[in-house]
Image (cartoon, rainbow, N blue to C red; front, side, top):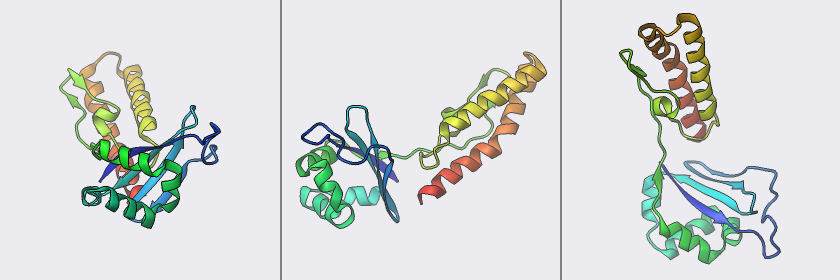
Length: 175
């Protein structure tokens, strides 16, 4: 699965094109589109779907047919010309999920946060998982001082199951 970013501009009067106090979501089974408001009254629109679908949209006609069928209101919000320009100016990027174990190498190196357990954004917990890494690491330093031979292996053992679980939950929340 991949994602591609589009943009909804402000209205001609410089206002938000949709109510701005909300996350707007267009769920469509195996794919979806979301829109988040920006301070300049634009919207960052992200289309998530399988790469096979992205690759099947090879020209303007197919793109507009796809949007007419699945997101008809978005054509007017984004603008036909802008939709075509933005869709074809870049390629869909992969959604990344990292699940590894262990997080350390001996007493010399440790990875935390997205380096250890990057997750797709559909559960909204990536940053919280990184903060939890910091909290667990702080507790281990408080418990063992600076003994990295104990801290790093114990950190790896304490974090991997929860980190793998939240990665899986995030993906399940999408598909």
